[in-house]
Image (cartoon, rainbow, N blue to C red; front, side, top):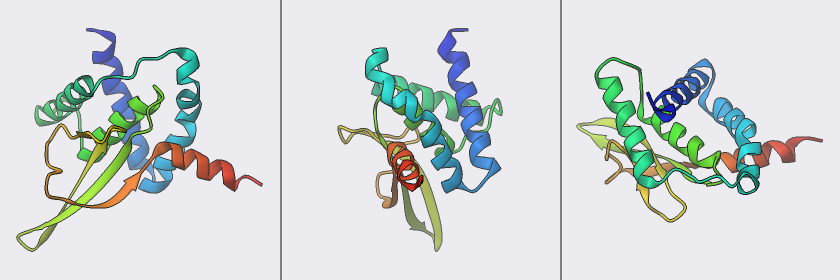
Length: 149
């Protein structure tokens, strides 16, 4: 098994556990704060961010593993994991959450918008959703830093 085949599911599992343990905004803020040093040092570490194709394949693998009952993945856990992988490599992508009404019921979905505007959604469901929330990990860390007296 290649390192990424082991590490990315591990990272996803840890992020999913964080998101389940507490309210989403609190877990998301903690993730931004904890990962900020990796974001900030990415240039000095000369990291190469994962490509769109690599992230798409990672996300598809998580979705496939979920369908085969090998792990539990949701659009939110997959999107936050892809965003975190980018953030640790110096890329401040956005987590988007969108809604639409289907047969009198609300459908919600999460995906990532790359800094170049490209949408990263391994489930390809974002098309006609109304974006209701845009979240950035860097912004979470900055808000926390500004709140310290």
